[in-house]
Length: 148
Image 1: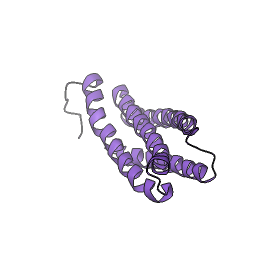
Image 2 (image 1 turned 30 degrees about the vertical axis):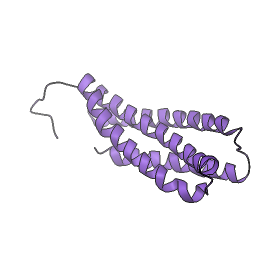
Image 3 (image 1 turned 90 degrees about the vertical axis):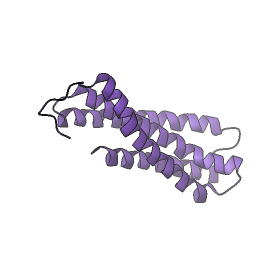
């Protein structure tokens, strides 16, 4: 659970950056109804690179901090990667949806939606996915030296 604030903070920054870039690009007419798919693709690829990089760094740190537990480090990697990828997606999609579908000011309406989704997905990936990955890969026996 110590990695949950880290996951939320990093994914929040990625989502905010994607939202800011998209809102700016919409306001400067760099994105239109005909080009938003290209923009969305580029932002998702950028989020995937960031997710992989930050997931690897967090996974390595988790590996060292856990006494070389590969299942735990892989779990942290998956949680970080999925949280950042979702943050990039929601951060990019929110301004596009509010501008082109709902015809609202994306700068005003996008922030609360994407922040809520990022927090929910970050917590979900850290808790639920971690449970399933550790259940699949982790140690199945509890020893006296294990700590909660």
